Image (cartoon, rainbow, N blue to C red; front, side, top):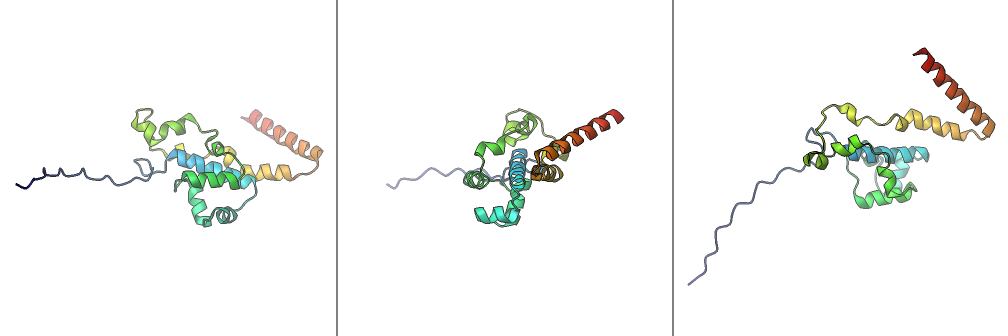
Amino acid sequence: MAKTEPPMEPSPPRRPSNRGRMPSGQPNPVDVHVGTRVRLRRTLMGMSQERLGEAIGLTFQQVQKYERGANRIGASRLFDLSRVLDVPVSFFYDDMSELVRDQSPLAVARGAAGLSEDPSGFEADPLTRRETLELVRAYYAISDPQVRKRVYELAKALAAADEIKK
């Protein structure tokens, strides 16, 4: 007598992958933070996106997507970036705010925080803006320490004067 196999249960329908994105379709805030840190270090080193891409075998467009958080950076790629940018892997997670941590989909799924549909939650820290980075690079390009100190004092005086006006 032939054995009959029990009927197979239908497998549950597969959910489409969100590729680490938020339910709103926005990039994962952690990916945005890591990308911002890549851009910060690259810019501080005076390296172009094209040169960074060549160093790790990517096009500059792929580097742009990493820096915006549009594409996630895998572990091996993050390791390569840390070597090319001469920083430890932990650098990419430094200064991550609690807000960013709490907006990660896993944290949200575990009830750590509610979702914010406001895109302003994804704005980069002012210290990582291009203008700030270029100012810091220009400041350190001043070879005379006395001149550099005077520029620093001037900036502080202007900021203090601006605060008085408010």
